[in-house]
Length: 504
Image (tube, rainbow, N blue to C red; front, side, top):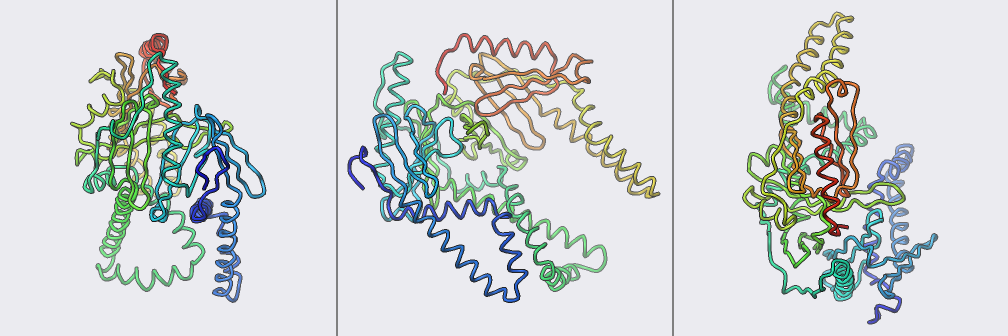
């Protein structure tokens, strides 16, 4: 690679590994459309093993060939205050990334790049869907130089617009704020929603496997599952014991999956502050070095599931601007601080929102929410179910449907009790949850749009649903009075008029 970044640069040949991995991830994301036709070909063939080997060989050649071509046609260089990128095999792409539009710039060091001093520089702009550019397989020094130049340019522009003088930053100015031990990562794994990703990822795959190999599945159940149930006991007791054992095994896998994911992503977690920025280092096999301008934080979210509440741990999510592309929303940008104790929350909140009040008076939503939710979502549907069973003279099933609707009432009341909202000193707060909770704190002057909605049932009681749109997402406060909504809107308008600080 040339020493001057103003000349066209090529990626390292080792970037082929990155492009292979990127292609594989894309294929697995579209697993059904990618592998279903191949599965049909295998099932229709008399020589399944031969066909499988041929398909694997052909697919491997295509993936490797595609990765080599992507490497060959990828070039980039710096031109003034922008980065030019040319890539694409058949469809040529010519991209221009202005320093002013860069939203995030992060450095990743995969395990296969470490021995060669290479990294991946990920650049995301405010209007892009996902990463605008992945400069994979470039020297660590080149990535550090580009990131420093972009950050210094943005700091200079921000200083000029705000009237303050820009100062250079260095690693020596950084202060360690948070670190996470292995115990913390285990706590994060069991207190986050990652436990449910197991079902979301493996559930459809298992369903496709059982459908495609129905005969083998029946043989497996007959030879292994049935004997296990019989070993636990005869009759209904054996079935109940087997089901409980199976459910326990699935739950154990869910938590194990979440814990391993947390360790892989956040091992060696260190969060440091550097003047107006936060910098995070983490990762087991792939080392992530990510930075975030504090001024770009839109929301300060603390959340935990029921296990997190039991072990007194909360996970902090710093919401950033949700990027989009051609009007299509993309994945929201989040900056996670895992498994913090309650005593650590105030200090971190002050670090992000220095002027935020220590406490915001909170109000409950109207109790009519309970009746509306219970009737619409549980009573009326279960009445239809019960009526259907009654026509079939299945009185026991009809009774179960009625009891189910009654059993849901305490959960609806619990849900209503967890709703809390308030605003004070130019900051808004909102909480929701059931067994766990999610609390969102946000500056009122960063609100982009507000909307009041009123259903016919709400209109009779002068109640509304207030929707507050931020660049990091939306806050929806249901069943509050029109007076409370108008007071909230007035506070938002006053905050926007009086606070002209940049936040994007």
